[in-house]
Image (cartoon, rainbow, N blue to C red; front, top):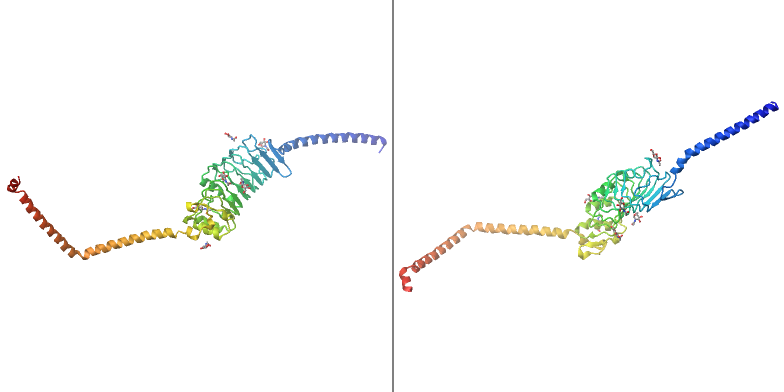
Amino acid sequence: MTEKTWMYYSADNSKCLSAIWSQCLYYAAVVCLLIAPVGAEDACPSSCVCARDSGTVTCRDGDDTEVPEDIPAWTTTLILRGRNISTLQRGAFTVNGTELEMTTLSVSYNGIQSIEPYAFLGLPRLHLLDLSHNRLASVSARAFHGLPELRSLCLNHSILSLPAAQLSNALSTPTLSNLHRLDLAGNRLKSIPLISFDIYNLHTLVLVNNSIEVIGAENVSGLYQEARARIYLSLNPFRCGCDLQAFYYWLKNSSQCPDAERLLCSEPESRRGTPVEELRDEDVECISENLEAVSYVFLGLVLALIGLVFLMVLYLNRRGIKRWLNNIREACRDQMEVYHYRYEQDSDPRLANVAV
Ligand SMILES: *[C@@H]1O[C@H](CO)[C@@H](O)[C@H](O)[C@H]1NC(C)=O
Ligand SMILES: *[C@@H]1O[C@H](CO)[C@@H](O)[C@H](O)[C@H]1NC(C)=O
Ligand SMILES: *[C@@H]1O[C@H](CO)[C@@H](O)[C@H](O)[C@H]1NC(C)=O
Ligand SMILES: *[C@@H]1O[C@H](CO)[C@@H](O)[C@H](O)[C@H]1NC(C)=O
Ligand SMILES: *[C@@H]1O[C@H](CO)[C@@H](O)[C@H](O)[C@H]1NC(C)=O
Ligand SMILES: *[C@@H]1O[C@H](CO)[C@@H](O)[C@H](O)[C@H]1NC(C)=O
């Protein structure tokens, strides 16, 4: 290679390098432009605080009445609080129909009144759902569909005027089969709002501070079957009579109720404030009531027997009675004749004139 050609080459090379350089810049710009929207998606929703390290997005007390639409894809914990969201609509937490890896969702204190079908769609990894302190009045039977990994559901202090059947239908979803903890404290419930215990894998059921007066024998047999489950029941107004017998024995025999010593009678008046556990067996026995029923039947039988004996006596004595009746009739007739005679005498006009 001559010197001249070398110079030519190097000149060409530098030209080439600058061409490559400008090409690089061009691609970099294009790549930057392409990356820009991805960066925007990562941004924190307005009026929220994001902690990317822990995957937590917290949105408090905004004027928004909706769930933020731009929840970042990296979110594992979403906390929405004090936002006046009245309705959770279908797929409220999905972003453009894509699933989120979220494991914890807390939407307490939002005044939520209604949960529509499939509201939690697109959250297949959700472990904990906190809906406490809302004002639920309507919950779809399919509200909790699509939550196969859910372990804890908090519905404490969250029910305002929800019909019991609606709640038990919503909670009877087979997709809640992994549920370990269900918190229903402070909801004025009158009964356990579960159709059956078998469909869940319940470890803890919190029914503290409700309006449960009696837990019937059918429900108690269900409780015995769920030997692993712990049921919290303090602050309920128990009616301590014969209806409570099966429950009373469950309380004494099983150790499934951790707050057993704090369950108090509210009725009858004479037992108000007495711990259910400290009742005597006689207090909840139904025998006295049975005895009463038995004694009424016995009284009826005795009366019937007396009636029968009376009729028999009448029958056997019919001749004597006939004679007796005849005697009476004759006596009457004699008497009547005497009267008749006196009447005729009284009505004699001569005697009347004498009297005048
Ligand atoms: C919540 O929003 C509803 C309208 O969606 C409004 O009527 C109500 O007053 C709001 N409540 C609060 C406490 O802001
Ligand atoms: C959602 O999809 C629409 C169009 O389908 C698009 O304009 C929008 O940017 C998407 N939003 C997000 C957060 O991906
Ligand atoms: C509601 O229940 C959850 C889970 O059991 C509990 O952590 C929380 O403290 C409860 N809230 C109130 C106000 O009791
Ligand atoms: C019981 O629940 C009611 C709401 O149903 C609440 O107002 C009250 O403070 C609760 N009581 C206790 C002792 O937690
Ligand atoms: C409790 O008993 C009622 C009938 O009194 C029944 O409908 C309900 O399914 C029972 N629930 C459980 C969990 O046993
Ligand atoms: C529970 O214990 C009582 C005696 O305290 C007993 O009469 C009853 O049969 C027991 N019930 C069960 C189901 O174990």
